[in-house]
Figure 1 (spheres, rainbow, N blue to C red):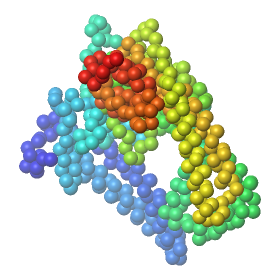
Figure 2: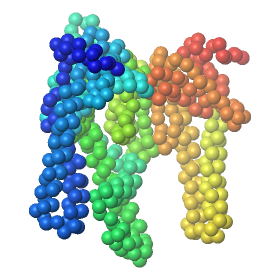
Figure 3: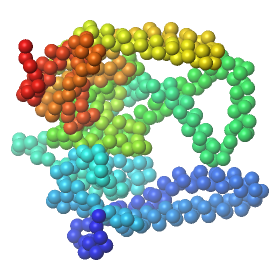
Figure 4: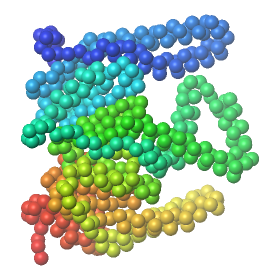
Length: 508
């Protein structure tokens, strides 16, 4: 925090720069998203009070002008009180209208630069720059410049992530690791959101209409719909499922197109750069020296369709904000599994001729452990139905069918989860794979492992199993080798990082 006297002695010629003044016009255009619902609500209220159409139109016009003027004034004050500068040692930002703040990030703490531009900012040639420091708590975790003109944002990105060029006499040319193939959109529906997306949209639409003053309950719309459902239950169920899947399918396809349109993943000297976004563009630059490995994720539906996607295991990737649903670590859209593995190998720098290590299967005791858990879940479900029948003296007949149907499904998932277990050691990486509903294979750079955690529950000890977790400063912070044989787990940890586990191991 700086005082008023300290700020007064920081002249503009000392390298302090302003944000883009075009932000005011862009903010006024974006204020339409606030003006529209306000105008709708005002219109319904005033028309209900028998106001003339001309009077309602005049009031709505005044309200729209007032909102737009307030947004413009606020943005002008924000621009007037915000300055930033880049020195040889650090990036600084001064901001705040009522409360002044002075934030400073050393250049050696910069881990990633994320440039985004929604359709309105793109139209005005603006972009938002988010500089990640790799910290996940505190005010220094991220510094945002909102907005800069696009050329200035790109120049800042290059400056912040400047690395040494290869010593080959000429600069290494940029290489494309992957580019969008629109045939991959066939994998978009292979998501749980296809089946629940319609219900989510319906709930959001109902809430929006309620905010705008459209009460479906009082209008009798829901009452009439419920009467029709009771008269035609099977047709209603079929129509509901079909509508839900259709809306979810359209939403999944649209989300894929918006998120991954214009996608390309490129390797620049010393760093990776990801471009994506059809309407809202995003450009993420990640230094390769921050990369600690990759993860190939295969959710169940995507895996059944032969697809997979690649994520980065890296230090410095910012965490997703509360209003974001996308995975900030994603390096690829859903794509064919074989291609995903090739992209993963290209990202973590597999050497020519280097083969992936063979994943070792885990003991049968691990399978038995999963089968027991599956049966336990079904028993709990059956017990819950029994309790409901005892309390209410009646439950639908189909309620007892739930445990019967759940048993083979749970056992199948348990067997699949066991088949997915595996681990291996390569020349430079530890590989671990687990999961059924969400299977993932992680190739973790052994040089990035800073510690080991060995866990063994009572039941694992009786089965001769344990879980070994590799601790790292990247990604989730730890990656597990689940339910591995005790001797094999300790041997893997000892060989992966020689000397790290030796003080705690007794060899037989």
